[in-house]
Amino acid sequence: MDNRTEVREFLVSRRAKISPEQVGLPAGTKRRVPGLRRSEVASLAGVSIEYYSKLERGAIAGVSPGVLNAIARALQLDDAERAHLFDLARAAEGSGALMRPRRRTARQWSVRPSLQWTLDAVTQGPAFVRNGRMDLLAANRLARAFYADVYADPQRPANIARFTFLDEKAHRFYPEWDLAADVCVAILRTEAGRDPHDKDLHDLVGELSTRSGEFRERWGAHNVRHHGTGAKTFRHHIVGDLTLAYEGLEMAAEPGLTLTIYTAEPGSPSEDALRLLASWAASKEADADTQAAFTD
Image (cartoon, rainbow, N blue to C red):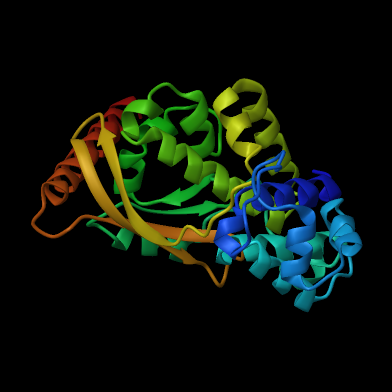
C-alpha cells in the first residue's frame, strides 16, 4: 500500500465529511465538491494553504505532532481517526517498525497452552483471539460452535472478513449485515495504517477487492475504528437470534492480538440460546471423540 496515496485519500475523505456549518463557516453557493475546501482546513488548523496542500498530496513525513493534532481538530477526527493519521505519519517516516513491537503473522504464531486454558475456562460465552486481519487464531469450544460457518471454510486460518464478504451464509449470520461489513472493513483499514507492510493483509485486501464490490466500495471510504466494546445481533443456524455484548481486550503479551469475549444479558433469551449452543457443541465434540475411538 502506497503511503502517499493512503494519506491523500484519507485526508480528502475526512475533509469531504465536514460541512462548513459544522465548523461555523458560511456554506456559500459555489461549492463544487462536498465538505470543506483545502483553504478552510488550513485556516482552521493554523497552517498555510500551501503547507496543507503539500500534506494532502501525501508528503506527511516529518510533520510535528502539534501540526497533526491541529489537522485532526480541524477535521473533527475521532480517536480512531486521529490514531490512524499518526500511524500514517509514522509509516511515512519509516519509524513505525521501530516504535512498535513486530507483529507475528498467523503462520508464525501458535497458541500457548496457558492461553488455551484461559479461553477454555470461559464457559458462558464465546471467547477467541484474533489479529487485525480478522484471522481467528484461538478459541474456546463455544466460540468454535458460534463461528461454525466461519470454520467451515477449509482455508486456514479461519477469517471473519473473508466469511463476511465471500460467503452467502454471512447475510443470515449477521441480520444487520451492512453494519457488520462496515465494522469489518474499518478494522482492516485501521490495521493497514498500523502495519502497512503486512503482506498477509495486502493479500487479503487484494482478494476481497477482486471478489467483492461491497468490499471495494467500503475500502475506498477510508473509515477506521477502535472496536473495543458494544453489542451485536446474530442469527445462528442452530440456536436462532442472539443479542450479545462484547469486550475486546488488547493482549499485552501478544502485541497486535485481541482477546474478545461475547456474553448475554443474564436471564435473557440470548443467554438461553448460548446454553443451548454450548450443549450442542459438547454433543458434537462427544460424537467426534466416539467416532475417533472407533476409527482407532
